[in-house]
Length: 104
Image (tube, rainbow, N blue to C red; front, side, top):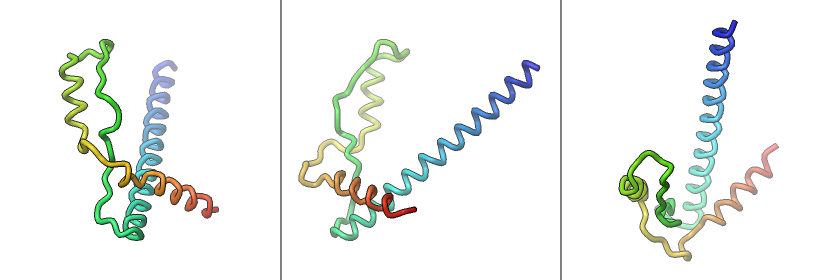
């Protein structure tokens, strides 16, 4: 009985993981598609994600050297700086909210 319950729990966890994955994929597609529409409307040729925000940080609780933690964060970042004048985040959020409000 315990083994059946554990297997049921694993299956439900896999189902939940799949559902969460699908939601994230749907959200990403919506952001990407709306960013493309906004770029076309405004005449932008490229839209980048500004992942340069926030300082690099380390944690002693992670079983990894602090040097490795910082290097991984640096490797994960693709943009070093973006001027506020080119930030279209708010426009994108407004457009996505408006599009969502229109849908039934």
